[in-house]
Image (tube, rainbow, N blue to C red; front, side, top):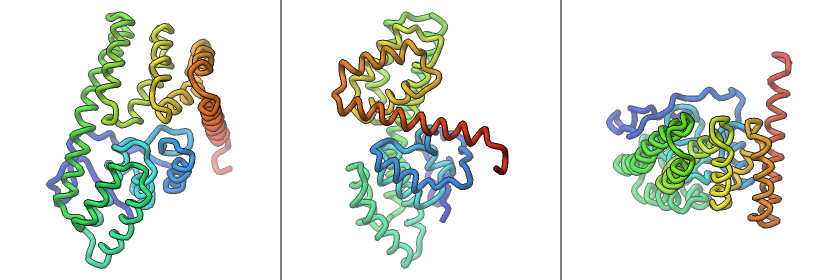
Length: 292
């Protein structure tokens, strides 16, 4: 079953997603997203569009990039980003709301399974409310408004931070002022902005030749203070990225050794190795003759 929720189309064409959506991303026609999401869940990592590709953001569940019901179901269950999990719940809820009586019973069983297995406690509560309310339109609208009320303002704040990044690149603000803004921005959007967007932002800061090494070193020390799951994602991106300066990678390894425990270090290096293997596989596939 294919579900598509467009930026200005929801139930009865009256319920809009209240923040700008990025255009759909073209996925490989053979992509088995449900299986890949399940593997991400087993690895205790954030879900991505494919091994080695960018992390899933809320737009992907609402703009037609991801349309497979099994993949959406797995996204609700295993996503470590609560906003992504809630976004995946919206098209499933719409389908359940529009279903006939027989199909609605099947959706109810599906949602009961999701409630039992979902990682995010907030999502489990939302699923339970949908089941009890029999997937009423007003409930779906509340989910949309709640998601937009969190993600919309966070994206506005993100765009403001990008202006600060441009000022840093143009040397119109000091490194200290930039770092203060980064800390304030991080606190303001924590738990509200898609983690995939935040992660991409930090990755680009680490890889940019226009950001001084002293600023990158401070950013790294801030990342080391983050919760383990977020910290591991950002550190492994840094260590696996070809754009990361060698000096910063060496500094990161020294700082990690002084901050992380043995098991945490092992996790970081294992995930880095996994990401490097994904990159190598993609390079081999890209170099292979067409049709080979």
